Image 1 (tube, rainbow, N blue to C red):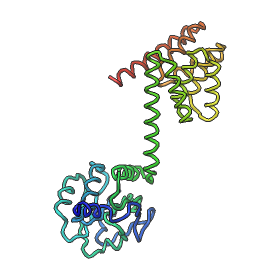
Image 2 (image 1 turned 180 degrees about the vertical axis):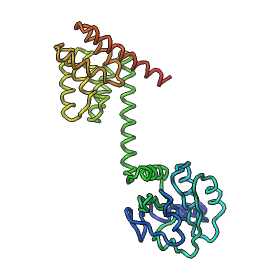
Image 3 (image 1 turned 45 degrees about the vertical axis):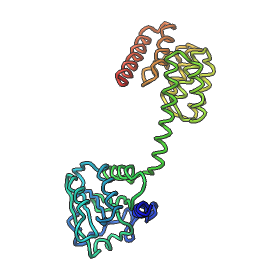
Image 4 (image 1 turned 90 degrees about the horizontal axis):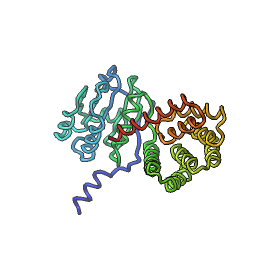
Length: 314
Protein backbone atom coordinates (compact mmCIF):
# COMPACT_ATOMS: atom_id res chain seq x y z
CA UNK A 1 0.00 0.00 0.00
CA UNK A 2 2.85 2.39 0.87
CA UNK A 3 4.48 1.74 -2.53
CA UNK A 4 1.16 2.39 -4.30
CA UNK A 5 0.70 5.70 -2.47
CA UNK A 6 4.24 6.74 -3.41
CA UNK A 7 3.56 6.03 -7.08
CA UNK A 8 0.29 7.95 -7.01
CA UNK A 9 1.96 10.93 -5.39
CA UNK A 10 4.73 10.80 -7.99
CA UNK A 11 2.17 11.08 -10.77
CA UNK A 12 -0.30 13.52 -9.22
CA UNK A 13 1.66 15.72 -6.85
CA UNK A 14 0.74 18.67 -9.08
CA UNK A 15 -2.87 19.38 -10.06
CA UNK A 16 -3.76 18.47 -13.66
CA UNK A 17 -5.14 21.91 -14.42
CA UNK A 18 -1.84 23.73 -13.83
CA UNK A 19 -1.00 25.50 -17.08
CA UNK A 20 1.73 27.64 -18.51
CA UNK A 21 5.05 29.14 -17.51
CA UNK A 22 6.01 31.98 -15.18
CA UNK A 23 7.83 34.23 -17.63
CA UNK A 24 6.05 33.74 -20.97
CA UNK A 25 2.56 33.08 -22.25
CA UNK A 26 1.18 31.58 -25.45
CA UNK A 27 1.81 34.13 -28.21
CA UNK A 28 5.01 35.48 -26.63
CA UNK A 29 8.50 35.21 -28.06
CA UNK A 30 10.37 32.37 -26.36
CA UNK A 31 13.52 33.72 -24.65
CA UNK A 32 16.49 31.87 -26.09
CA UNK A 33 19.58 32.33 -23.97
CA UNK A 34 23.03 31.18 -24.93
CA UNK A 35 22.17 27.53 -24.25
CA UNK A 36 19.19 27.59 -26.65
CA UNK A 37 20.45 30.03 -29.26
CA UNK A 38 20.92 27.19 -31.77
CA UNK A 39 17.11 26.78 -31.92
CA UNK A 40 16.83 29.97 -33.99
CA UNK A 41 16.45 29.12 -37.66
CA UNK A 42 15.57 25.48 -36.95
CA UNK A 43 11.93 25.96 -37.95
CA UNK A 44 9.18 24.53 -35.75
CA UNK A 45 10.53 23.23 -32.46
CA UNK A 46 9.22 21.14 -29.59
CA UNK A 47 11.04 21.66 -26.29
CA UNK A 48 10.54 19.30 -23.38
CA UNK A 49 11.87 20.35 -19.98
CA UNK A 50 11.99 17.50 -17.49
CA UNK A 51 13.84 15.87 -14.62
CA UNK A 52 15.02 12.63 -16.15
CA UNK A 53 15.11 10.56 -12.95
CA UNK A 54 11.52 11.51 -12.12
CA UNK A 55 8.91 8.81 -12.79
CA UNK A 56 6.38 11.39 -13.95
CA UNK A 57 8.80 12.78 -16.55
CA UNK A 58 9.71 9.34 -17.91
CA UNK A 59 6.03 8.41 -18.30
CA UNK A 60 5.32 11.78 -19.93
CA UNK A 61 8.11 11.33 -22.52
CA UNK A 62 7.11 7.73 -23.24
CA UNK A 63 3.52 8.80 -23.92
CA UNK A 64 4.63 11.74 -26.04
CA UNK A 65 6.81 9.60 -28.30
CA UNK A 66 3.80 7.37 -29.07
CA UNK A 67 2.04 10.42 -30.51
CA UNK A 68 5.08 12.08 -32.05
CA UNK A 69 6.31 9.36 -34.47
CA UNK A 70 8.62 10.87 -37.13
CA UNK A 71 8.31 14.61 -37.75
CA UNK A 72 11.10 15.53 -40.16
CA UNK A 73 10.16 19.21 -40.24
CA UNK A 74 10.22 19.62 -36.46
CA UNK A 75 13.22 19.82 -34.17
CA UNK A 76 12.98 18.15 -30.75
CA UNK A 77 14.92 19.61 -27.82
CA UNK A 78 15.08 17.79 -24.51
CA UNK A 79 16.32 19.85 -21.57
CA UNK A 80 17.11 17.91 -18.42
CA UNK A 81 17.40 19.48 -14.97
CA UNK A 82 19.93 16.81 -14.00
CA UNK A 83 23.64 17.10 -14.78
CA UNK A 84 23.50 13.66 -16.39
CA UNK A 85 20.44 12.34 -18.20
CA UNK A 86 18.92 9.17 -16.81
CA UNK A 87 19.38 6.07 -18.99
CA UNK A 88 15.64 5.44 -19.19
CA UNK A 89 15.14 8.81 -20.85
CA UNK A 90 18.19 8.34 -23.09
CA UNK A 91 16.82 5.00 -24.32
CA UNK A 92 13.52 6.68 -25.22
CA UNK A 93 15.29 9.63 -26.85
CA UNK A 94 17.45 7.31 -28.97
CA UNK A 95 14.29 5.84 -30.51
CA UNK A 96 13.31 9.26 -31.82
CA UNK A 97 14.32 9.94 -35.42
CA UNK A 98 14.88 13.34 -36.97
CA UNK A 99 16.61 16.40 -35.51
CA UNK A 100 16.95 16.03 -31.74
CA UNK A 101 19.06 17.69 -29.08
CA UNK A 102 19.78 16.87 -25.44
CA UNK A 103 20.84 19.64 -23.06
CA UNK A 104 21.51 19.42 -19.32
CA UNK A 105 20.58 22.37 -17.13
CA UNK A 106 21.79 21.61 -13.56
CA UNK A 107 22.35 25.32 -12.84
CA UNK A 108 18.70 26.04 -13.83
CA UNK A 109 19.57 28.76 -16.34
CA UNK A 110 17.06 27.59 -18.95
CA UNK A 111 14.64 26.73 -16.14
CA UNK A 112 14.66 30.36 -15.04
CA UNK A 113 14.60 31.87 -18.54
CA UNK A 114 11.54 29.88 -19.53
CA UNK A 115 9.89 30.24 -16.15
CA UNK A 116 9.20 26.54 -15.71
CA UNK A 117 6.66 25.96 -12.94
CA UNK A 118 5.98 22.26 -13.22
CA UNK A 119 8.03 19.42 -14.64
CA UNK A 120 7.63 18.10 -17.20
CA UNK A 121 6.76 21.13 -19.36
CA UNK A 122 6.33 20.73 -23.11
CA UNK A 123 6.62 23.83 -25.32
CA UNK A 124 5.41 23.98 -28.93
CA UNK A 125 7.35 26.76 -30.68
CA UNK A 126 6.67 27.99 -34.23
CA UNK A 127 9.28 28.97 -36.83
CA UNK A 128 9.22 32.60 -35.66
CA UNK A 129 10.16 31.55 -32.13
CA UNK A 130 6.65 32.22 -30.77
CA UNK A 131 5.15 29.93 -28.15
CA UNK A 132 2.21 28.28 -29.90
CA UNK A 133 1.04 26.20 -26.93
CA UNK A 134 2.26 24.44 -23.78
CA UNK A 135 1.40 21.25 -21.90
CA UNK A 136 2.55 20.79 -18.31
CA UNK A 137 2.52 17.84 -15.89
CA UNK A 138 1.18 14.34 -16.31
CA UNK A 139 -2.60 14.02 -16.77
CA UNK A 140 -5.14 11.52 -18.07
CA UNK A 141 -5.60 11.17 -21.84
CA UNK A 142 -2.24 12.78 -22.63
CA UNK A 143 -2.16 11.22 -26.09
CA UNK A 144 -5.16 13.30 -27.20
CA UNK A 145 -3.49 16.50 -25.98
CA UNK A 146 -0.18 15.70 -27.69
CA UNK A 147 -1.80 14.98 -31.06
CA UNK A 148 -4.00 18.07 -30.91
CA UNK A 149 -1.14 20.43 -30.00
CA UNK A 150 1.22 18.83 -32.52
CA UNK A 151 -1.29 19.10 -35.37
CA UNK A 152 -2.02 22.69 -34.38
CA UNK A 153 1.70 23.55 -34.53
CA UNK A 154 2.05 21.94 -37.96
CA UNK A 155 -0.97 23.87 -39.27
CA UNK A 156 0.02 27.16 -37.64
CA UNK A 157 -3.14 27.17 -35.52
CA UNK A 158 -4.01 27.16 -31.83
CA UNK A 159 -5.08 23.80 -30.36
CA UNK A 160 -8.80 23.35 -29.85
CA UNK A 161 -10.78 22.27 -26.81
CA UNK A 162 -9.92 18.55 -26.54
CA UNK A 163 -12.82 17.60 -24.29
CA UNK A 164 -15.36 19.41 -26.46
CA UNK A 165 -13.97 17.74 -29.60
CA UNK A 166 -14.08 14.34 -27.87
CA UNK A 167 -17.68 14.91 -26.78
CA UNK A 168 -18.63 15.71 -30.38
CA UNK A 169 -17.02 12.47 -31.57
CA UNK A 170 -18.86 10.44 -28.93
CA UNK A 171 -22.18 12.01 -29.87
CA UNK A 172 -21.49 11.33 -33.56
CA UNK A 173 -20.70 7.70 -32.78
CA UNK A 174 -24.02 7.33 -30.97
CA UNK A 175 -25.81 8.91 -33.93
CA UNK A 176 -24.06 6.60 -36.37
CA UNK A 177 -24.88 3.52 -34.30
CA UNK A 178 -28.61 4.31 -34.25
CA UNK A 179 -28.64 5.20 -37.96
CA UNK A 180 -26.77 2.02 -38.90
CA UNK A 181 -29.23 -0.13 -36.93
CA UNK A 182 -32.26 1.63 -38.40
CA UNK A 183 -30.83 1.41 -41.92
CA UNK A 184 -30.34 -2.35 -41.49
CA UNK A 185 -34.02 -2.62 -40.50
CA UNK A 186 -35.01 -0.76 -43.69
CA UNK A 187 -33.03 -3.23 -45.76
CA UNK A 188 -34.93 -6.03 -43.99
CA UNK A 189 -38.23 -4.33 -44.79
CA UNK A 190 -39.02 -3.55 -41.15
CA UNK A 191 -40.14 0.05 -41.75
CA UNK A 192 -42.16 0.35 -38.57
CA UNK A 193 -39.29 -0.38 -36.20
CA UNK A 194 -36.84 1.60 -38.36
CA UNK A 195 -39.21 4.58 -38.25
CA UNK A 196 -39.42 4.37 -34.46
CA UNK A 197 -35.62 4.41 -34.17
CA UNK A 198 -35.21 7.31 -36.61
CA UNK A 199 -37.95 9.26 -34.82
CA UNK A 200 -36.20 8.80 -31.49
CA UNK A 201 -32.92 9.94 -33.05
CA UNK A 202 -34.58 13.09 -34.45
CA UNK A 203 -36.01 13.86 -31.01
CA UNK A 204 -32.61 13.42 -29.33
CA UNK A 205 -30.47 15.09 -32.01
CA UNK A 206 -32.31 17.78 -33.95
CA UNK A 207 -29.35 18.22 -36.31
CA UNK A 208 -29.08 14.55 -37.35
CA UNK A 209 -29.49 14.73 -41.13
CA UNK A 210 -29.25 10.95 -41.56
CA UNK A 211 -32.10 10.42 -39.09
CA UNK A 212 -34.31 12.99 -40.83
CA UNK A 213 -33.65 11.38 -44.20
CA UNK A 214 -34.36 7.91 -42.81
CA UNK A 215 -37.56 8.94 -41.06
CA UNK A 216 -38.78 10.82 -44.13
CA UNK A 217 -38.10 7.80 -46.34
CA UNK A 218 -40.07 5.54 -43.98
CA UNK A 219 -43.01 7.97 -44.05
CA UNK A 220 -42.95 7.98 -47.86
CA UNK A 221 -42.90 4.17 -47.92
CA UNK A 222 -45.91 4.20 -45.58
CA UNK A 223 -47.76 6.50 -48.03
CA UNK A 224 -47.49 9.47 -45.67
CA UNK A 225 -45.79 11.87 -48.09
CA UNK A 226 -47.53 14.91 -46.54
CA UNK A 227 -46.04 14.06 -43.15
CA UNK A 228 -42.65 13.65 -44.82
CA UNK A 229 -42.99 17.06 -46.50
CA UNK A 230 -43.78 18.64 -43.13
CA UNK A 231 -40.80 16.87 -41.54
CA UNK A 232 -38.31 18.08 -44.17
CA UNK A 233 -39.80 21.58 -44.28
CA UNK A 234 -39.26 21.97 -40.54
CA UNK A 235 -35.72 20.60 -40.74
CA UNK A 236 -34.73 22.84 -43.66
CA UNK A 237 -35.76 25.92 -41.70
CA UNK A 238 -32.86 25.15 -39.34
CA UNK A 239 -30.40 23.13 -41.42
CA UNK A 240 -28.97 24.00 -44.83
CA UNK A 241 -28.47 20.58 -46.44
CA UNK A 242 -28.72 19.24 -49.99
CA UNK A 243 -29.51 15.83 -48.52
CA UNK A 244 -32.56 17.26 -46.77
CA UNK A 245 -33.57 19.00 -49.99
CA UNK A 246 -33.38 15.63 -51.71
CA UNK A 247 -35.71 14.20 -49.06
CA UNK A 248 -38.02 17.17 -49.42
CA UNK A 249 -38.38 16.79 -53.20
CA UNK A 250 -38.70 13.02 -52.92
CA UNK A 251 -41.67 13.50 -50.58
CA UNK A 252 -43.09 16.34 -52.73
CA UNK A 253 -42.80 14.38 -56.00
CA UNK A 254 -44.31 11.29 -54.38
CA UNK A 255 -47.49 13.23 -53.61
CA UNK A 256 -47.39 15.91 -56.33
CA UNK A 257 -45.35 14.79 -59.39
CA UNK A 258 -45.27 18.22 -61.05
CA UNK A 259 -42.59 19.04 -63.60
CA UNK A 260 -40.82 21.30 -61.11
CA UNK A 261 -40.84 18.69 -58.33
CA UNK A 262 -39.62 15.94 -60.66
CA UNK A 263 -36.86 18.14 -62.07
CA UNK A 264 -35.63 19.02 -58.56
CA UNK A 265 -35.92 15.39 -57.47
CA UNK A 266 -33.70 14.34 -60.37
CA UNK A 267 -31.14 17.04 -59.58
CA UNK A 268 -30.83 16.31 -55.87
CA UNK A 269 -31.01 12.51 -56.22
CA UNK A 270 -27.75 12.62 -58.19
CA UNK A 271 -26.11 14.39 -55.23
CA UNK A 272 -27.14 11.95 -52.49
CA UNK A 273 -23.97 10.18 -51.30
CA UNK A 274 -25.16 7.15 -49.32
CA UNK A 275 -28.89 6.52 -48.76
CA UNK A 276 -29.36 4.26 -51.79
CA UNK A 277 -32.93 3.03 -50.94
CA UNK A 278 -34.13 6.65 -51.17
CA UNK A 279 -32.21 7.16 -54.42
CA UNK A 280 -33.76 3.98 -55.83
CA UNK A 281 -37.18 5.25 -54.72
CA UNK A 282 -36.51 8.52 -56.55
CA UNK A 283 -35.71 6.58 -59.73
CA UNK A 284 -39.01 4.69 -59.39
CA UNK A 285 -40.96 7.95 -58.98
CA UNK A 286 -39.29 9.40 -62.09
CA UNK A 287 -39.93 6.22 -64.08
CA UNK A 288 -43.58 6.10 -62.98
CA UNK A 289 -44.05 9.62 -64.30
CA UNK A 290 -42.51 8.99 -67.71
CA UNK A 291 -39.04 10.42 -67.06
CA UNK A 292 -37.18 7.52 -68.66
CA UNK A 293 -33.71 8.99 -69.16
CA UNK A 294 -33.56 10.75 -65.77
CA UNK A 295 -34.84 7.61 -64.03
CA UNK A 296 -32.14 5.48 -65.69
CA UNK A 297 -29.45 7.86 -64.48
CA UNK A 298 -30.82 7.80 -60.94
CA UNK A 299 -31.14 4.00 -60.98
CA UNK A 300 -27.50 3.88 -62.04
CA UNK A 301 -26.62 6.26 -59.20
CA UNK A 302 -28.32 4.02 -56.63
CA UNK A 303 -26.43 0.96 -57.90
CA UNK A 304 -23.10 2.80 -57.66
CA UNK A 305 -23.83 3.78 -54.06
CA UNK A 306 -24.78 0.20 -53.23
CA UNK A 307 -21.63 -1.16 -54.87
CA UNK A 308 -19.46 1.33 -52.99
CA UNK A 309 -21.03 0.36 -49.68
CA UNK A 310 -20.53 -3.33 -50.47
CA UNK A 311 -16.86 -2.81 -51.25
CA UNK A 312 -16.35 -0.76 -48.10
CA UNK A 313 -17.94 -3.42 -45.88
CA UNK A 314 -16.33 -6.37 -47.63
